[in-house]
Image 1: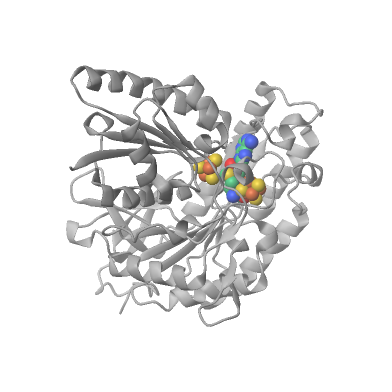
Image 2: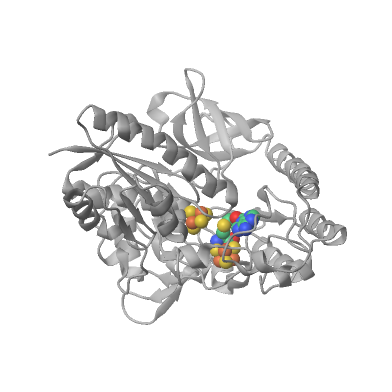
Length: 460
Ligand code: SAH
Ligand code: SF4
Ligand code: F3S
C-alpha cells in the first residue's frame, strides 16, 4: 500500500544527502515523499547535534508531532515518528525515554536498515526501535540507487566521519570514524547523477579532503586525482567539494585547482580561530601561519579563488588578544564569505570538561558581532569587485519577480537576472551590474554583445 513520507532536515549538506538516501531506502517498501507532516504516514526528523540550539529544535518539533500523532489516532490513522541523524546517534536512549511516542531512533550509519526498523515498528507499535550501532558493514554497500533525478546541482557523499577530534566537536562521535568510499562507486554514482540531469556535483565529506581510497584499477587515489577523474565524465559543468581541513590540503588537490577548469574557484576552508593558543586548545593541529600558507598556495594555483571559513568565538580561555588574532587572520585572508558561531559546550566533548574559564555569553555576543561586521565588509567588497565582469551563472530557481531567475555564481553567490523559464537548469553568462551584501544582480549577456568577455564555463 502506498504510504506518505515526510523528512525534515537540519544540519550540514551531508544530512541533505542522507535524507535523499533515506527516501530511496524506503521507496521499495511503499513510501513516497510528500511536502508536509500533516499528509504523512511517517515523519523522519533528520537532526543536527553540532550546537545546543540545533539539538534543542528537535524536542520542540517532537512536541508538535506528538499532537499530530494523537489527532491521527483519533481519526483511526497512524503516524510513525522517527528521529534520525546526529541527535539520534548522540541522544537515542534519552529521546526514547523523554518522548515515548517516538517509534524509531537511529543514527547516520544505520539508515540502510530502515525497512527492518519499519517492519519492527509495525509489528510491535509502541515498543520503540533504537538502532544507533556503528555497524561493521558500510551502509553505502546496502543503499539502493538514487530514485529519479537529484536535480541540476547534486550532492555526492564520498567520505564520512572524522578522526580529527577537535575538542569542541561532536562529529567524530555522531558520524564515527573516517571512511572513504571506493573511487569506482563514486564514479558510478556521479555518472548516474549526471545522466539524471545534474550539471553541478558537490563531493561531500565531514573531512572531504582526507578522502583516500582504492582506485578502480589498483593503487590509491587522493581527492585531487578523484576530482580530475570526475571532471572527465560527460556532462560535468561544475565541481565542488566540502568541507576541508587545512592540514589535509595536499599539493595534488591544490594543483587540481589550477588544472581542472570545471573545479569551481571557491573553497570552504574552516580555520575556527586565528590564535595559535586557541587552535592548540581546539586540537586543530595547525597554526595560523600554516593556514595562511595553504591560502597562499591555493591563490598561487588559482589566483581568482574565493575563500570561505567557519569561526568559533568564545572558545574556553579565549582572551581579547586571541580574538584580535582571529580578526588579524581574517584581515590577512580577505574572505568571500564566512560562517561564525558562538562556542557551544557539547556533552561528551573534551572542551566541555575544560577547567579553563568559559567566556561569558555577553562577550561571545560582542565578539561575534565584531567578527561578523568585518566578514560582511569583506563579503561586500568581494561582491563589489565583480561589478562589470561576466560570470557564468547556473540558474536553479525562479526569482521573486515574474520574468526573473535566480542562480549561483562560481563563488556560490546568488545572482538574479531577467531570464525566461527556458533558462532554468542551464548555465549562462551574466554581466554583473549590482552587488549587495548577500547577492548580485546582472543582465544576461547576449552572444551578440560585442564586448562580452569570454565565459570559459559556457559550452561553445
Ligand atoms: N567538518 C567540518 C565542519 C564541522 S561542523 C570541519 O571540520 O570544518 C561546522 C562548523 O560548526 C565547524 O566548522 C565549527 O565552526 C562549528 N562548530 C562545531 N562544533 C561547535 C561547537 N561546539 N560550538 C560552536 N560551533 C561549533
Ligand atoms: Fe569536527 Fe574537527 Fe572533524 Fe571538523 S575536523 S568534523 S570540526 S572534529
Ligand atoms: Fe550536524 Fe551531524 Fe552535520 S552534527 S553538522 S548533521 S555531521
